[in-house]
Length: 480
Image 1 (cartoon, rainbow, N blue to C red):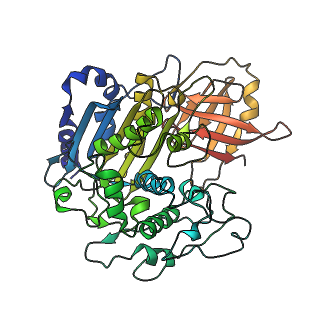
Image 2 (image 1 turned 180 degrees about the vertical axis):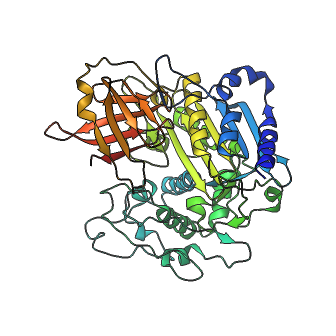
Image 3 (image 1 turned 135 degrees about the horizontal axis):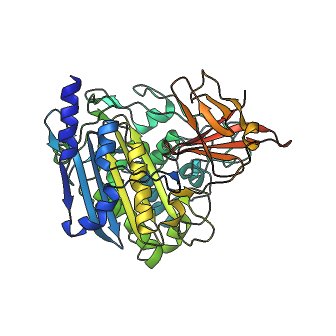
C-alpha cells in the first residue's frame, strides 16, 4: 500500500499545467525555490512545490497571480480527484472555507453605502428574523457590523460542522438560535463588543442573516448579484449543494493520509460556504485594489476601500501587514475546512494579488512558503522572509538560557536547552542541535530554520521562550 501511495504521489507532482506559458520563466524561480520564513545568512536551503507536495501528501494545488488587473500567470499541480486521477486545472473549484468572509463583508459594505445598514449602529436595528440577545455585555456597547466584520463583537467562537448530502439543512436563523436541525450551539456573547479580538465564525452567520434580512433574498442570491455576476466570477457559488455546472469541476478533499472526505454541505455560507477557484477570487481581490486606487466603484467606493485598507490593525475583511519604511500594505485571509485549505493575499502598492487553493488538510505550510517567495520575488516588503546574521556571544552568555520550557503534556513541544563547549544546544530524546546566536536573546536552528527567543520579566530574568517555526507559526512556552 505504501508503495502504491508513493507511486501515486510521484504521478501527482508529475502532472503540472501552466497557463500563460510566456510567464513561465518568471514563475520557475518561485515554484523551484520556496523560501523559509527565516534563515541564517549563508544557510539558505530552498525546496520546490513538487517536493513539498510529496512530503506533505497534498493531492492538488491551483494558484493565480494577477498584476495590475491582468492575469500574469496561473499554475496547477497534481490531481483534483485521486480515485479517478482527474488532473487539477484552472477550472477546478475548491471549497473556499473562510475566504467566504471577505465576500460576505464586501456584500454587507455595499448595503452600508446604500444607506440600508450602518457600520457603527446597533446591529439589532437592521436584523429582522433574529436579534442579538441582550446581556451584561451589551449594556455598555451594542454589537455593530464593524465589530462583526473585524471579529471584535464578543460573539462566541466555534467551528461549525458540515452536513451530509441528504441531511436536512438548518436555516441561518436556526443556526443562530441553536435550534434543530442545527447542530451548532446558540449564539452568545462572552465579552463587551469592541473590547477584544477573537476570531468568530458565528459572527459571520449574523452577517449572513443581516444580508438576508436587508435584501429580502437568500444570501447566495444576494452575493451572486452583488459580486459574482458583476465580476464575471462564473466559477463561484454559495449555493448548497453547488450547481451542476460547478459539480463537474469539483475537487475532492483529502486528509493528511490521503483519505478522501465525502462531499458535504456548508449552510454557514457567510462564514465558510463558498465554492470557487483562484482566478475568480484573484479577480475579486484585484477589483478591490482597483477601487482603492481609481475610485471606479466596481465593488465599493474609494472612500470605503480606504477604510478596508486603512493602515491600522482593525480588520474590515482582511488582516493587514505593514512596516515602518514601506508604503505598502499587504492584506490577506486564510481558509480551512475538512479537506481544503486556501489563501488569498494582495499588495496594495504593487497592485498585485495571489490566490492559492489546495484539496488537502495539509496545505498551510506550502501556501505560506509560496506566498513569501512571491513576496520576495515581487518586492512585497512587509511580508518578505527574514535573513538573520550571526551575533557574537561570549562563552558565558548562553548559560542564562539553559533549562526546560513548556510542559511535556502540552499542545506544543517541550524544549530543553544545555550549554556544551560554550554553545547553546536544544536537546531531545531524538537529537541534539547546536544553535547559533542571532541576537542578544535569540538563537536559530539552521537545519529546521526555527528561532528561539528568550523573553525576560520585569526583573530581567528569562521566564518565557518564543518559538517561531520555519512556516512563520509561533508560540510561547513558560520556563519550568
